[in-house]
Image (cartoon, rainbow, N blue to C red; front, top):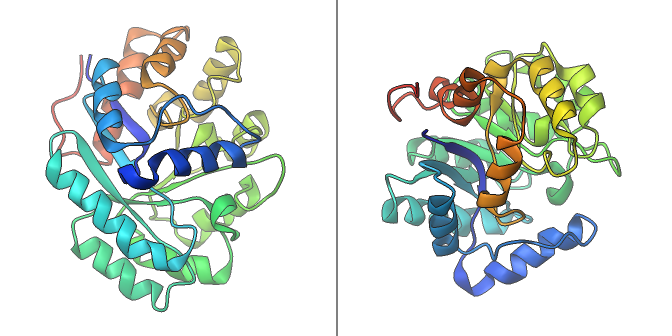
Amino acid sequence: MKIFDTHVHIFPDAIAQKAANAIGKFYENFHMECDGRLETAIRVTEAAGITRFCAHSVATTPHQVDSINAFVMNAWRQYPQRIVPFAAMHPALPDPRATAEAVIAGGFKGVKLHPEIQGFNIDAPEVLDMIAPFEGRLPLLVHAGDYRMDNSSPDRLKRVLRTFPKLTLICAHLGGWTVWRRAARELAGENLYVDTSSALFALRPDEAVRIIRDYGVERVLYGTDYPMWSPVGELRRFDALDLTDRERADILWNNHLALFPEDAEPAE
C-alpha cells in the first residue's frame, strides 16, 4: 500500500541533532527517536514503506526563513520523487506578503507554522495578514494544540477558518496535541484536515479511531512527526487501529490526493 507522510521535519546535518534535541526539550524533554537529518529521513521513511512525505522546518526567527526555505528546496531537488516541499514563514518578516508570493512562485507545495514554538497566536492580525496570500493557493500545516498554552487552541483555529473560508488548513496532531478530545469536540465538522502525528503514542487505539471518525476519515492524513518518532514505530501504532481496509487506504494515501493531485492514482 502506498503511504504519504504529511509531517516530517528535516534539518541541515550541522545542526540536525541540536535542533531535534531542542524540539524534544520544548515537549517536556521527550526523547527524540531520530536525528533530524535529511538522509536519515530518506532511509527511515523508506524502511517504513512511505512513498512520499512533506518536508519542512520551523523558523523560530524571521531571519531563518530564507535559509530554511533554500534548504528544503534543495532537498526537493535531491529527492523530487520522495519529497513535497513546505516553506517556513514568520509574521515578523519585513514584508510577509511579499515572501508569501515568493514562496508560491518558487514552487513550494505548502507552508508549515508552529505558533507555540514561533511565539505567536495563530489568529493574531499580523499572522492573518501573513496567511492571506495562501488562501485557495497552498495548504497550511499548523501545529495545533498544547495544554500549556493557547496559541493554536480550537477557538483560534476556528477564527482562522472563518476569516479564510477557502484556506486548506491541516491541523497537526489530530487537531490538538495533548488536548485531542477537546479539539475533536470543537473542530469536528469544520472545513479542515487533521494529521495523525504525535497523537497515537498517547491515545488508546479505540480512542484514536473514535476521534478519527469524529472528524471524518476523509479529513484525516497520515503523519509521523519525524524526528520525534521513528516512522517504522509510528506505522505499527497506526496498524494497531481497528480501521477498515478502505479507511486505512484513505488515511495513508488517498486523502492527500485532494491536496496534491499530481501524486498518483488512488490506492486500492
